[in-house]
Amino acid sequence: MQQDYNYDRALAYFQRGQIDQAIETIKGLLANEPNDAHYHGLLSCCLLSKKRIYAAEYEVQLALKNNAEIPFLYNTLAHINMLKNKLSQALQDCDESLRLDPEYVDSILLKSDIYLLLNQNNKALQCIDNAAQIDPDELAVSLAYGEYYLRTGDFNKANAYAEEVMAKDPQNLSCNLLMGQLKLQSGDVKEALRLAKFAILQNPDSSEALALFCDIKVRQNLFLGMWWRFNSKLATMSNTKASMVLISLFLIFNLMSQLLFDFDYKILSNVFSYGWLILVLYTWVGIPMYQRKLNKELSQFRFNQNF
Image 1 (cartoon, rainbow, N blue to C red):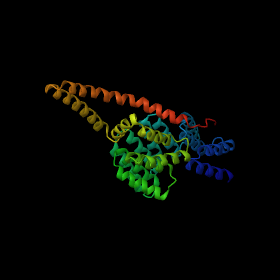
Image 2: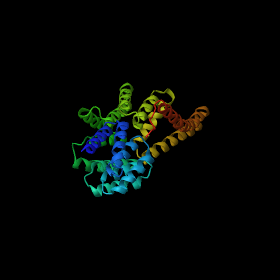
Image 3: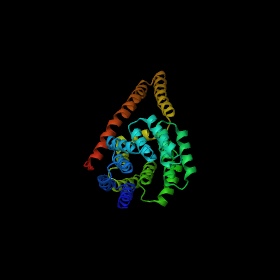
Image 4: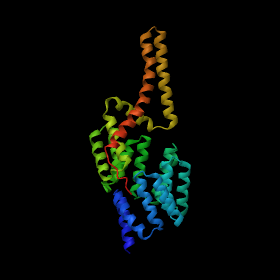
């Protein structure tokens, strides 16, 4: 009875983003039941939320050795493989989870995330629709729709779903991050910053919250701001469409350079000729500068590495 109570307490800590408290509670549970698959599975989820991927993988494998019939273990393993960029394996893990429980919404939504990474947007949306048919009132489904439309560039629909979740659960970490991204896209930097700080206070280990905070800093930067807007726009496009945009820009710059040269505007022709090179260099330089900015922001937070 006490074990069940402590497990529920650990689960509640985890769901509220209080990961360190959850880990400490699970450690106490494992001291008494070292082979319990549910305890190892929840510990794996906690470690995964702290981006300790290999430790999380070790724990979930221990759990599967003790009980290979628990759907959420395969769902956790799918998360791990997704972070390791093993997307095909992650899809297989989701399918195994759904074999054990065909209505396990978490695995259906995770498949949607994986399909988005594979730029298979239609399959991603179909997964969310399937989850909505199973549990239309689940907040995670509304969040998935919001994140899908943010990713595909339909900010009005994304905002509608984000507001729906915020009305029901204003403390929801994922929803605050989604709303923060939408506010940043709309230019409301002040509100985006408030939401980012709130998310970090909820879970200082959230890499998504820290990434949003860094995006805001970059957006405010005179040099990197334009680079961020350009890349944010490209990120909402498919690979084919983004490639077409870049090719079109290349053709436009070169066509203008040639036309100006033919009409004997040689100086302006050189400006357009060099303009393309400057744009390319700008995008290349922007990436390492963004990474340094992110690392600088991350370094300002202290993470508890003890376990």
